[in-house]
Image (cartoon, rainbow, N blue to C red; front, side, top):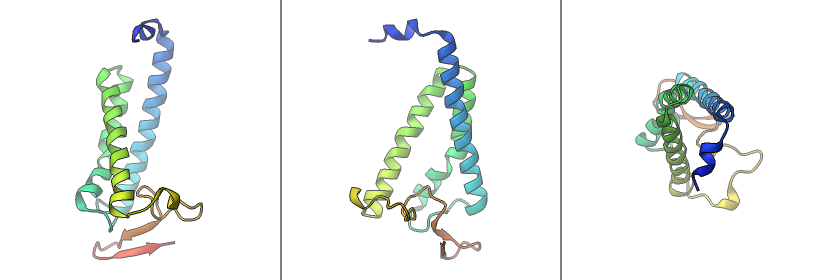
Amino acid sequence: MIAWMHRTPVWVVIVVGFITAGLFLVGTVAHVADLLHHGLHAYAWAPTWLNYYWSSPALLDLLTAALLISGKRRGTDLACAIMTTDLAANWYATYGIQHSSLAAQPASSDWSSSPHSSWGRRLSSDGTSAVELT
């Protein structure tokens, strides 16, 4: 099953690694911008640990990109771990906390229930109350 990996041209591995690293760098920029704009508690409806988890890719995505560019296997492992845990966290937020259903996700004009959207409930600038953004 794994024999095909030994026959993969090196240039393909390099191109795929750089594309993947580029996508993680885009994720880094998005998460850093979100942190700067909304802080660590961006989602008033989510528990603190989940807000911290959604802030962690600001550093983890950058580390993943650096490991992928340097050709380290740990970059691939970290990328898989990030994507797997992010999927689990988003599933928990959608179906565990917000009690949404598959049919209700998301209407084209209502992205406010998405944990990664820039719309919806955010903490006010003083951090004491949630405000509705439109």
